Length: 80
Image 1 (tube, rainbow, N blue to C red):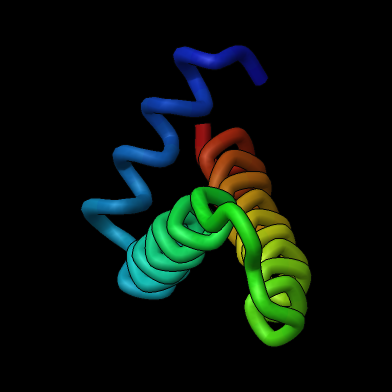
Image 2: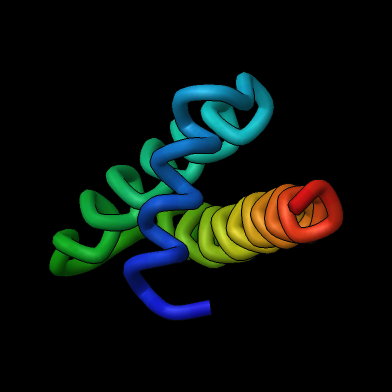
């Protein structure tokens, strides 16, 4: 799947699929928090742990989103 197709599919799912939309929003929140944490010169142990945890959660969300995208694309190919 090329970048243009991926972007179009994401846009379509953002408009049509509430689950995908919520996953994307959560992914964005994690990304924003990770940006804040990475800007800290001397993060505490708790902040370092939060960063590692958020990276794992963000990756899990990305995997879920990708799975939804693949399922949607598969369903479109079957119906055409």
